[in-house]
Image (tube, rainbow, N blue to C red; front, side, top):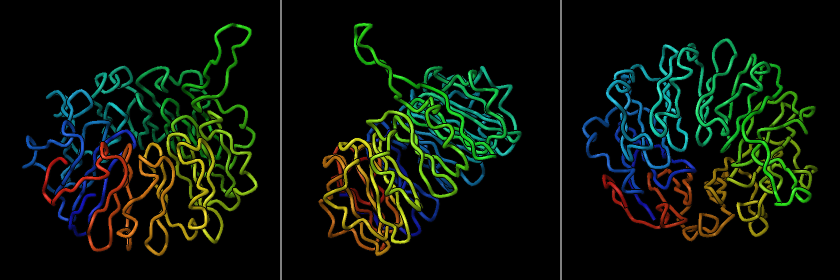
Length: 392
């Protein structure tokens, strides 16, 4: 359990990380977790006026109010960069993280990336990265969409870094989201284009082999239903699209949330979607009840807490579990017990303002400024840290 007294603070983490950062109201930063990731002593005097923080699996990058970028943690995953790259990190608007690299979007619409695989190799498409509106990431790739509605991708080719096969369809794009190894783009007319890893082969002998959708890179089976799409939520191996009529369409690995027919009759008037690596949760109707589907080991079964899942304001996730914030400030969690599905600090979870999940633990920020955690000890789910401490 972590306790820290803060004012106007924001918690940050990611499903690929075992660390957390607390961005305080005065722009200072406290982080704890993986010792290789949280050691910011070399840049501590620069961690002032911080606006936001992004995280790879074991490194941090922070945007300062003056547009500069500060990074720390494991160098191979973005905790350091070459001097020539650092010189380009000026007037940074936003930083996006894959599992191994960072990409920074500047105010002039240019992109700078660094980290694993040399920032997953954006030098090959550098000439195309102009007038960029925003960036999305898969585990090993990035996708940037420009003001003219075109999409530029780079990184691992089989992980969504190669969009050549659908490039002619990628027009008038307004948003892109990434799963572990695939991307989905929403076009201005509400249609969807997908690419990346699409199938997995099961079986060994040629007569017994079968191919099933595995990562969401192929949405042809539901393409007719993908109209009027307002937003898309990725799990690790599937996507769920929320249409403007508040209906949900899913595709990808059926056993990891890509098949929702068993709960389709309950997925009416959907207000919000969230996902672990292998399951989805939807907040539905005026009562804001929760409907879940997908792999039971990843939170696809909420039976033991179903009656408590009403008046839900927000849902967040770890890799294996969900935590729902109710309107009364209480928290309900389910999924894999060890990774946040079972909360052993429920009596302390009151007046909660924000919840953030890492790979295996949740941290909740209460209105009085205390931070309460639960989940895997390896993901800082059962440690005690004082304000100003580095590490766990």
